[in-house]
Structures are given as C-alpha cells and as structure tokens.
Image (cartoon, rainbow, N blue to C red; front, top):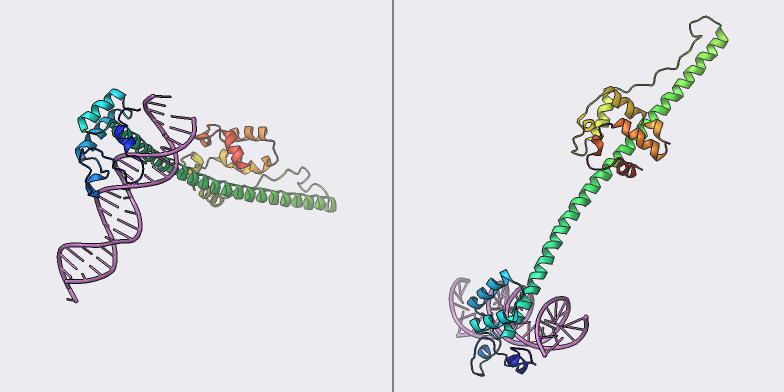
Length: 243
DNA sequence: ATCCCAGTTTATGTTACTTCA
DNA sequence: TTTGAAGTAACATAAACTGGG
C-alpha cells in the first residue's frame, strides 16, 4: 500500500470519517468529524513549497506532512489539486492572450479589406477615365481626318500628332490620396507626396490591367522603387491581396 | 507498485434572501 | 415599521476519490 494511504483507505465511501489534520476522536458532531479545510498556516507552507517546486519528492512529502501534521497522502493530493488549479488558470490566461491577438488581427484584416476595396474602386475609376479620354481622342482624330479629306490641304494638319494623355487636376489627386489615408501608414503616397512621376505611374495603372502577374510585379517595382509600400509585406503579398 | 492527470464527488464556507419575534 | 437573529437555498471552492495511462 502506498505510503500515507492508511487513513484514506479506511475513509473511502460516503459519510466516511476522513480525518485530516486533526486527530480528533470520532465524535458524532459532523462539523468536527468530517473533512475540513486546512488551516491558514498549513496552506501558507504548502503554497510556499509549491512556488519553488510544483512536484514533491517522496522524502520531501513525508517531511512536509510531518511538519504540518497531515497525512502524506493529503499532501500529495493537495499538490495534485494545486497543479490542476494552476493549469486551469494558465489556460485561462493563454486564452485571453490569444483572444486579444485574434481580435487585433481581425480588426487589422477588416481595415485592410476596406483599403483594398477603396483601391479597387479607385483603380476602376481611373481606368474608366482613361478609356473615355482615348475614345474622345479617337473621335477628334477621325473628325479632323474627315475635315482634311473634305476640305483640302495645307491647313497645318498634315502631320497630325496624338493628343497627350489627359492630366488630372490636383483636386482629383487629393481624392485619391484621401482614399489611401484610411490607414495610418506613413508611406509617401499616403502623406500626399505628389511627385509628377508617381502621378503618371499611378495614372498608367489602367495600362497594366491585363498584365500577367510577373510583369505586374515589375511594374509594381517601378511604381514603388524604394519599397515603401513593402514595409510589412512582400510585393507578391500585396499583389495577392490585390487580385 | 507507484505516481500523475482529468474528471468527479463531497463537504464546507459564503452570500443573499426570507421569516419571525 | 424597523431591527436583528436564525434558517436556508444557491453557489463557489477545497479536499478527496476514481479510473486510466
């Protein structure tokens, strides 16, 4: 039989007289004879030991039991229960931590999703604008050619050049920048850096609409050579997100 | 044979509420 | 009507048990 089980074995079953720390006689008084909680002093000692070692060597268990006036089995059970309490507490803490992390990620995902939708919308607008201006250009050209055919020669239109691509006003650009500013990211575009080149490159987005991914990535690099947009992800990740 | 763990049972302590003198 | 003691149901928690690995 296991050490310290003498008393316990005798106490199995209901309404057992499971004496713990008290060597009290088996009086009929329930309050006295039934199991009772350990004293504050006993708990303090047990907690103190538990802090340094959550598992007890048999010899230490015997010693502690003697010191506290408990059965070794009681000490063993106390440690067992204490480990269980500690574990459930730890699980609860880990759960809270994971939940916080999840909530943060979920909220970041939502804001990125919104940003993506805004960018897609903006891309669509720009694309539509460029298509419209191309159509206008073609109509103008056709009209002028017609007039040459109709009207004669030497009117200065003999060497027609295509119109330059339409430029957008700063007002339109502000709108676009407003869209990017959703996030608190501090890249130059978000801050409203209106470099001519960047603007041109952004306006050329419609030209890339049907590009294969590899080429698109090259184009992306040309738009953002310094990798500012890549602060937290690779360009491929951005492209994945875009498509 | 012994220990540990997860899950369960049992006893106790606490609190809020009710009853009654 | 107010007050305080006694009783108690509901709940939380600790001590102990059970069965399996």
